Image (cartoon, rainbow, N blue to C red):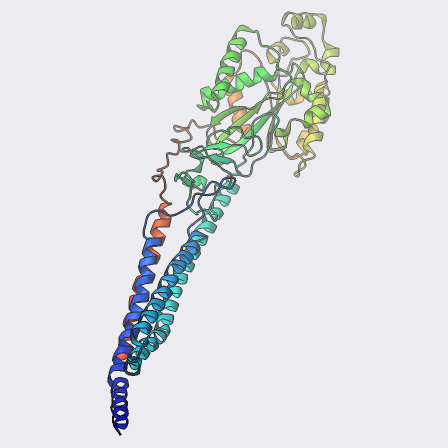
Length: 539
């Protein structure tokens, strides 16, 4: 009968254990499991999100800029937190179950301590429900924060892009390469990081940032002209050579000087540059151009102008008011053949042109020269050209007709050169007073009528020595759409001087958003746990 008494005591003990001990241990296990899992999660999140480090530099060969945090790094961090926290929680649960099983269920004590073991195991399993709820809330908070950030970022990207495009369209901003062998029209230059010389081919509001791109060296670079992108050194994406400062901020205005051999293009260039510097405060973009101009000015003063070389020209670049002028002075021989004209790719971009007419190359003028006129020209070193100016203009017109707009020029300046000698000839009488009428009488009526019928604004002038600076400056100012006012600040602005973060530290935006995500997750998790406790107590 003694075993019946023992059985009775065991049943009473089991009833008491399940009635009084099991609920307490079960509830305590649930609470400890939830808090322990949250602790593991947030300690892991703190190791991943709080330190100001732990971001890889952009790989070589791609755009040397960090992607925006919300595009890629946020998901890497989320995976790193999960990959760190889940194994920790799982390992702790497994160790607790194994230790309790060895301690409580390894010998005869299991008949007495089974309720305690069951309460712990059941509590661990039951903790999955509140933990799942908290995990859903934390994940939802994470996703909401990321989604809100992405929406704001995409809005800024769209607005900045739209504003820049609108400004460029309203200002009719043209970007083009001034170098021979290229002359390409440019959609977006390559920008050079002033800290590490890395070349950024896509410096604009995009997945790498709205207001700033962060170079792999840590330098923060502006993404739009309005934010100061023009203060960075720009390269042509086609030939890699340096473009003028302010490109993209102001319009590039290619101004080709069109004329046959010995038409006086270089002389007119020297006179026009000198006039613009005196009247509009124009400055050279390239110091090499300034040195070339000084030599031209000296040669002009000495009357020893040399013939332009036969190589394709690099533009003489002038920063004047709201324009960067590209003045192209090719050798006249480049206009004597269709294939040579085609090589001058800059003709495809501009909306303005200077047609330089050598009056002594006109057949009608050559036929009407009297002996005294020929002696005058010989004394002045003028040898009448065999290239009819009408043929030169015709070749240029054919090349321009291949453009999408049919070669339409907004403004054309027709300049009769060597006016100082022309006025002293019998044939040239009246040319200075009315160049248009004089050209018509000298067999250029077809050209005059053609220019008039094409819808372009056309002005006629004569040019000679000594130059009339005000008249030439006014002509070029009208030709390029300038207002003719001298501007006080002509510089491109101070070069961009970025504040680079110390080596090994991620972009500042990474650190800010990471800590915002961590703080949001902590607050929502604490709120969720407090809500579960209140709900449980109020039942």
